[in-house]
Length: 133
Image (cartoon, one colour):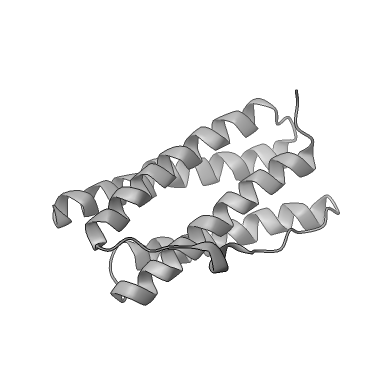
């Protein structure tokens, strides 16, 4: 069953909302720790890029309900481990969405967001796990 553009963009945006809210809550609990402080800012830019696509295609932007539903792990190491899993899930989600996406502007944004997770966020969180271990 194929997803509509609205379905694909919504899936991506909700995932980016979740990451942004999770990293914000981690920063509230542990303070401005790396890599969460930098990656939280990046997630905000990811949300902005996706919202721009919603606006371009005149699709209603979903509300971000994630801040009310986030539970922060007890330790920074656990937060880093959770973030590794989340970034891996994010890359898999983008694989699924990209397989059904033909719009060039949408593909460009999704590939960029997937690349950020794979090439910057995941390695930073893996370093965090080892540093905290």
